[in-house]
Length: 185
Image (cartoon, rainbow, N blue to C red; front, side, top):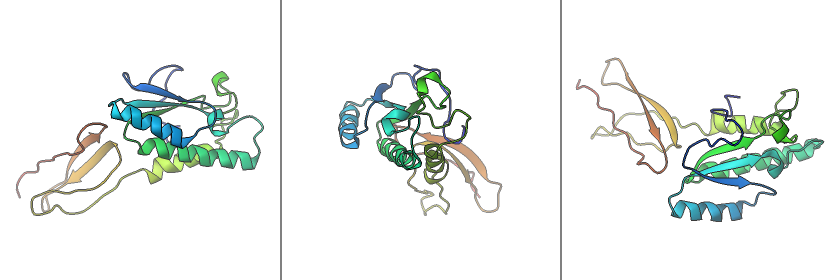
């Protein structure tokens, strides 16, 4: 579970206090969702997406082809939401088909075996959406890279000295810069 979710919440609990909840129900139309996200972002609102398996096509008795199509929709929806700067979190209601709220739309079957959608999310979150960068600073001592919002660990050193390690976090709408000061060589 930790490969796909960073924490589990009780039903009805907000991931981040003060966020605006946007519930995805029925068929997901990314164009309309994008318009709503842009409207909320223009008002500087931070959004929490609430999602159930039925809204992406996960349900009891789905054929292999239907489950594959649902996995594609899950990946598409997560990618869309993850890329929007107003979205702070995506909350899946009913992760396991054995939960009453899941209505067989979970990412895990009743026997806890992962569905294809779970595997797609595992690859997106655990591999594709990780930022990695390495290199030397410019003459002004700066190193620039593009990355996703989230927590980073940086290791830096001057010459052959031991590396200094620090953590920093990029969150919306904060400035996305960090400064690590190293002792002179």
